Image 1 (cartoon, rainbow, N blue to C red):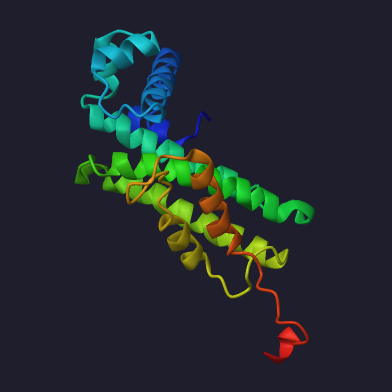
Image 2 (cartoon, one colour):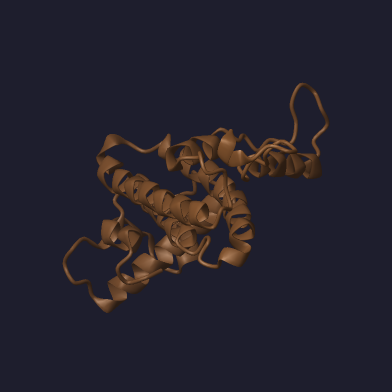
Length: 209
């Protein structure tokens, strides 16, 4: 986690922190993130502190409420999405492969951030909203690079890309079907593949359509 990360600033404030405070905040963020990614959105303060290797009192000095830590994790995950998006389509030769890997990872992260956002209160809208704005900007820049590489449909906008990925509900069962993770992954790949450039019908010049 970088020294300038927005998640750290949410817990440390804008004043220059002491070195021990920075270490404690980093440990708390790493611990909370591990709980969240493991599917536990309601770890106790004692559990987080124990995993971080700090006292419960230290946790409450930095995050008087658990929601503060959860908001910081949403910010941290969204900033990770931004950093990852910035690397997509840097290499035109594998632009689609890079985007495909990004999209699959983003679907998993989005499930987590959406679940957390539902339990946050309005006081965190500023930090989380700013992270969402950064993520939209990262999607816009990534979509432009994908267009430049002819890796996605030229008519696809950044906003449509965000909505289409958000519309994918990665479940492995429905209507009584037995769970099947491989079928789920195939279905997701089919949806993502639909974003590729559309081929012209045989014998038709695309410029004339």
